[in-house]
Length: 125
Image (tube, rainbow, N blue to C red; front, side, top):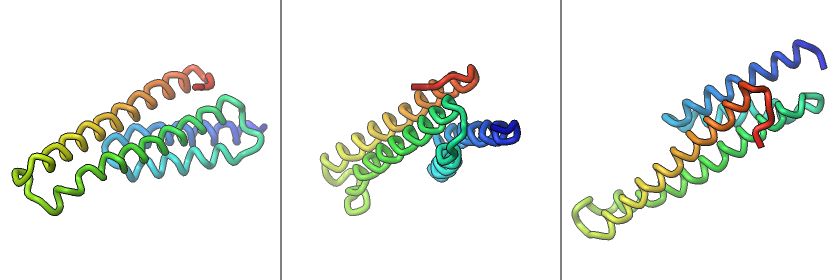
């Protein structure tokens, strides 16, 4: 594999990890992170640890998106009812906040674990 391709793949993974960190604040960067990692996965002659890193980013982003969507579903009753109208509306909102926190902490943990292994040039799995 050429030196230029290796540097390009490292650049993609680095930008992907930066976008993965920014996905803690906005979900749009999660999609960008997934897309950049996907570009590395599609290459046949990339190094094994880079493939593992890219797959880790893709897996983590997909799971985060699923957790975030599940958390968002719990906020739907807030559209139709006032916050103080029924106790079950409050309960749904609290459950939504809990699941949002779980999704956020999951992505933060995945980012810390993956980025620490990336700095050491090791596979993350």
